[in-house]
Amino acid sequence: MEQVRQEFNRWKQEQTAQVPSLDTTLLRTPFSSEIMQQQYPVDFRVPGAKDYSGKTDLEEHVNSFYGNMIMLGVSDAVICRAFFSTLSGRAAEWFKSLEPGSITCFADLSTKFIRRFAMSRTVRKHFTHLEAAKQLEGESLIDFLVKWKNAIGEVEPMDDRTAINVLHYSLRTGTLYQDFIVHPPQSYDEAIRRVTDYANAMEANSAKQRQETGSTRRDTRPDQKRGDRQQAPRDLSRLTRPVTEVLDYAQSCNLIQLPEPGRDGRDTSKFCAYHRNRGHTTDECRVLKEVIEDLLKEGELTQFTKKKDKGKRWKKFFKRSGRDKKDKDQDPEGKSRPSGSK
Image (cartoon, rainbow, N blue to C red; front, side, top):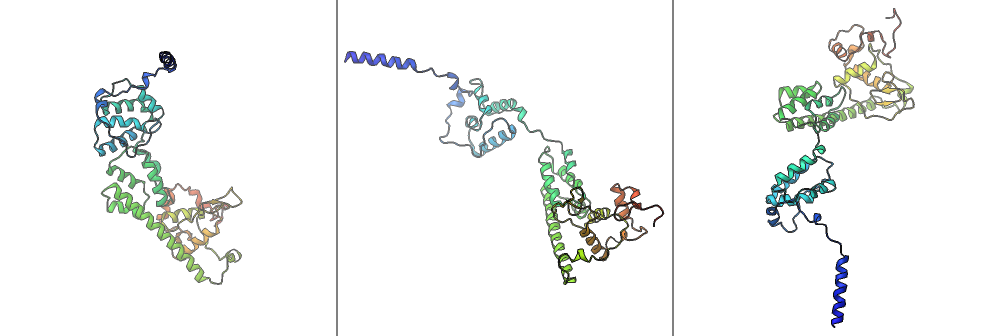
């Protein structure tokens, strides 16, 4: 038995010598002894926590984490120890590099964390960046809202009054622009809600108008089959301005709503501003000319069929849009008239 005991002790010593020593750096912690002595809740999990690897906005991560912990009402020591569970990648490696006992509260931890990953902070643009998000000519309110919400998410925080004024300035002239003046919104949420309501109302009105226009044409010409318009087109009024300019003016007055973009035609060198596709030019568009003809019969756009320009509103429109005075010497198809022609 003594011999067996000696053999066992010798074997035990040999096995112990083969076990590598454990790296003490893996066991050290940057927290003070006071933090480590406080009891940590069993099975505690941070609600809504997302791993931070040092590539996204660090302030957003810290604020979200700290807000969730405050709502739970846990101690500062628990907040410190729970923060490590939200780190991964190089952020977790940075945590292990902190000096042992150097963290005494979450304020210390968050300060060192923000300094280390300051380059990951999202830089917000000045609110003047919203100048590029203005509503363009002919752009629907629905499209403008999408562009506006994307742009305002990239700028620095603003107070409600500044946000309302910038939004109001970005709108084009019309009923909504006037409504902001007559009834100023009391908050930014109210302003956005009002723009959204107007956008939805305009979309519904346009859909109804297209439905009624299509019904009227089928009722007034019941015997006309598909394609007959191309075989026997009706006589169109002669315009004093190119069709492109008439379209621009009609859009500014909300007389024409653009249809959904169609498929491109064979000739991709030509573009139609009405259909927003390639295949033919705006001045060649027969459908647009038919729409203009319908408006003329309703008493609209009549100033474009008279030789003497009596209206002033459309003159100001072309002056603002930068139309050259030489355009008055062009025919409705956009070609220059020969000298001496009437």
